[in-house]
Length: 253
Image (tube, rainbow, N blue to C red; front, side, top):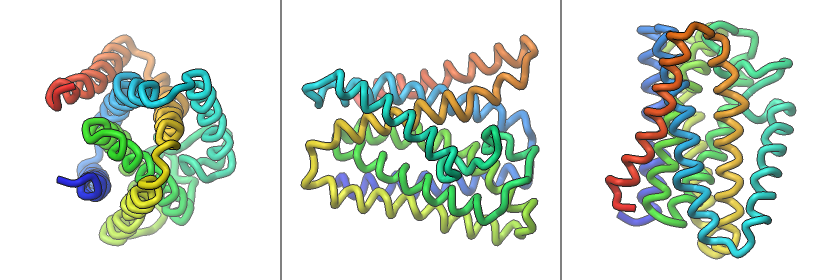
């Protein structure tokens, strides 16, 4: 399968899986399942960053210090974008994306605009990873899908409580997910002649996944303080990291 087909397949599959999961949770909503998915997603994101994306970026660059600086810049950039209502759909003093099942103050329109922007960026990240290495692309796509599912569940619930019917919410989320494919295709054709910037894009990809895990997802876990909950969270984070590790073994790295 060609790199372009990998990018298309990963972008489409990620959107379909996340939207289908969101619809399933809406019909059989259990907060405990969503909490578990969030913990697993944290592990998958951090595993992809530290086991795959960063090692590959370091291998491709001749200036590790510049690469590290790019990651720091990326984290600050995503913080600023979040404050400007573009990244992760937030517009209060704290991020509501993964508290969405319990908070419905954001409008459905903001969900769709912010979600489309986020999906577009995901597509660029997926394309950059696949253009570097097929294996890296697979791992990166899996990590992105892992964090998309709990996000889409929250967004879907917001749309329902904003007055949208279930069929319309599903349709709008599917349309929003097409931004991943658009971002992937644009990045594929643009990066064909700009391979020198791939390490920088990988560093920004690492920064975005670190920011999502640390700033968006982990704070929500601290709301559950029982020892049992903490043990479960740690085990699921380890499971997420382990899944990336075993994908590495399966594809022969």
